[in-house]
Image (cartoon, rainbow, N blue to C red; front, side, top):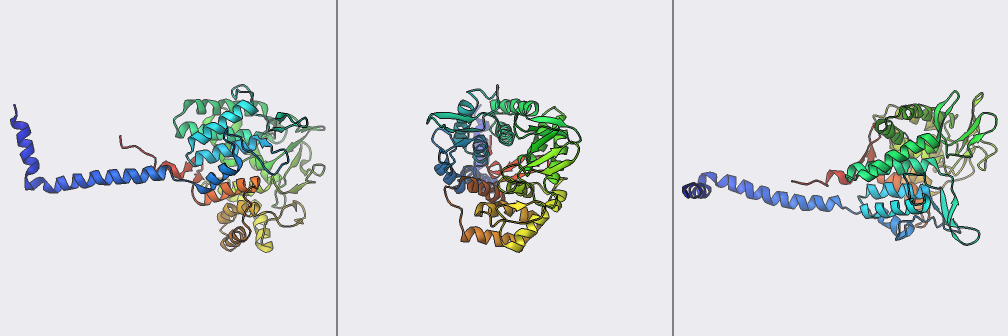
Length: 397
């Protein structure tokens, strides 16, 4: 009965198996040390995100824009923060941000309604929703971040919320425009103008997100909206400079929004369009064409030494330099174009004129741009996001 264990023990002690014993012991130490190293990398801190949290995110998950006198919160800020929290593998922050968003911008139920755009201190000094009209770009980012988080963290509720929001975006924030097709409107109301005209925004359309929804949602309207999005971006930049807002006329096509606050110029909205284009996967079928269309802006940055704060989209006339956050936003764009000299120039501008710690929008642009450059995240050709921490968070058993 006991001869087999004794024989095995003697075999283990024999010189012939000594190299295997040494190999097994070495492998065990390697797995232990590698596991510890990978665990550390799995939770590797992202200093820029930690600083953003300390400066802009309250303990309850509300993202505060300190630039406004009433310290407003927007669905855009909540949406970006969700994506950054996922990028940092910061699930506790993600949950706090999501909970605040649902409770305060969606009356406690994101399955029933899209989040309101703006929340803050009202004229009567009470706090609550200031503008209930949702913003479709924020809604896209919220649904996208939830979908990715559901996959990465194995959380079915996040995935279900993502799909429900995607359906509501399609049903409430898009329209089949004559001559253009299924198109994302900036919000459910206020953008359908008299005379078969619509007010649109190219920066609301990051193509990787649309590709992801096209693949994940069983609704062919997403594919049609992806097609209209490329036309909208091109129509918003007739000379290679993107407009903040553009008017689409069913008879005349795209026209500058000369009646809007920006008078048809490109500025604080448009800067994101160059950022989104630069961050697209090299294998994305639309990237090369999009970069070619927008290259005049890169050439202008090269000649001036900075991206402009505002630019006339027809004449190229500018009104002065944009912020350091604008320079940050151009980095992926310039890198994608292979404009190394101009890229270094803008990196030096960032070093010489650092972004102010409490400049909310500049910090957002920087987190996207520098997070992408540092490979904290990258988009693939199907719109999936590949996060740095994914490559270290694994289990042996």
